[in-house]
Length: 107
Image (cartoon, rainbow, N blue to C red; front, side, top):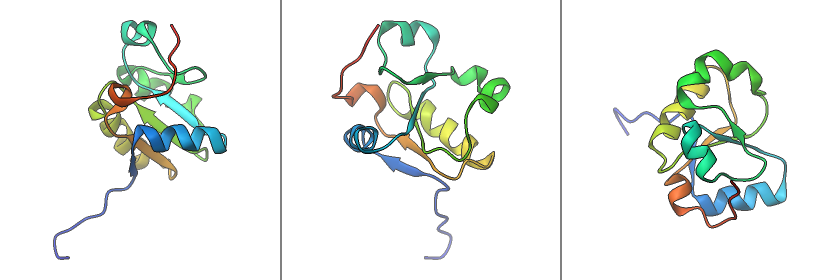
């Protein structure tokens, strides 16, 4: 298709993210603000707020499968694109974010 450019990352549903976490080791990167994180987050997820990511992305393994999540999937889409541009090849945005997450959350 002329003029069509494929996104450099995957979009997955919250259900698919839950399945992947159950089958293998993945990094679930939560990019929400600290107050949002404290209000409830997925156990075992890595918390790096979106505005801190340019200074802290080296804490992440670029070879690990990384699923990026926020509240509704908008911020995480931007972060996922940025990580892909920084060389993360196995990165996916969790579309709709935690607004449709059916797994347990902890505070």
